Length: 93
Image (tube, rainbow, N blue to C red):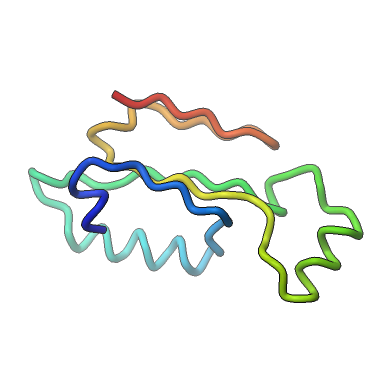
């Protein structure tokens, strides 16, 4: 959260689960002030992608990283975030 308050955009190398995303939003809502207006979150992962093949399912079953990513940025810098099935577009100041 401290990096986001400093205006940094974070890219995580795997998607957040729905539960993790919910917890992040709840924690952020508790810290919203005029100096920190909130965050924007965008994730791409197996549920959002076309690739749900046997290979990626096997990797997940063996404990490998989930394919995908998560982008988290402060609302005052992220002007637009669009998610399509296999892409995530971000426009930031």
